Amino acid sequence: MAAERLDGREVARSVTRELAETLTTLPFKPQLVVVRVGEDPASVAYVRGKDRTATQLGLTSRVEVLGESTTQRELLARVLEISADPEVDGILVQDPLPPPLDIRAVQEAIDPAKDVDGFHPVNVGRLWNGGRALVPCTPAGLIRIMDFYGLEIAGKRVVIVGRSSLVGKPAAVLFLQRDATVTVAHSKTRSLGTLTREADILVAAVGRHALLTREMVKPGAVVLDVGINRVEGKLRGDVHPEVTEVAGYLTPVPGGVGPMTVAMLMQNTVMAASRRRGDGGA
Image 1 (cartoon, rainbow, N blue to C red):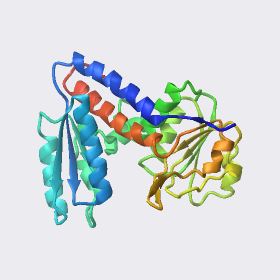
Image 2 (cartoon, rainbow, N blue to C red):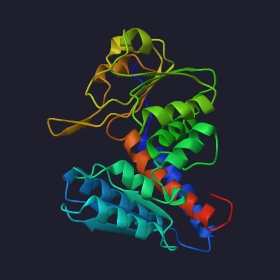
Image 3 (tube, one colour):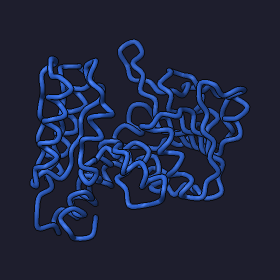
């Protein structure tokens, strides 16, 4: 029997419906600013999608496009200027930046209260310390998918393949906070297949097409495929298609985790606006 499909689009729609209801209760309209540097085709498409979703939801959305020749100093100055604007509630700088620009320095220039990507060191520290943080969108989306489908986390063995600061590390914290037993695997992990076969919940977040095969998956496991790989012009995940014959639940690519990343960005924007403007949070 094929794995049950975990439809991220459906979960994302539920998130945006809740946010739309929340927005009707707010005496202000949250504003999101997305900064893009250069004309990288993937970045252009991602930013366009975020802007469209924010506008459809009812947020004030603004995209600032800076030229490819923008210097680090110019970018930092502009981010600091936007960050200081009291009308702006959320700021996102689209990664990757053209070399030699340093994305980490830019992220640190954003007011942590407006850091809707959740990458500022203050938000990272609060997440690890169990404080009130703006959480990175993709890992937050994984937890939301699990909750939407009523899939238990507490007491489960979670294996995350990938240790990036964008997904792997924050996902590990979020699953730990929900009382899972978590292992993070990476390029130096030995006997990866032996380890992944022990997972009740398996997160693939490496960026290598079909890295995880059916022999590496425990029968009935929940498999969350975060990978985005372009193969022969089509989007494909880190999980081999045959895994659907073994897993109990599986997020598709596309249509799984991707839509949740944008939905959780919208949630972070509304949350940041509510907290910053003093009503206690969304």
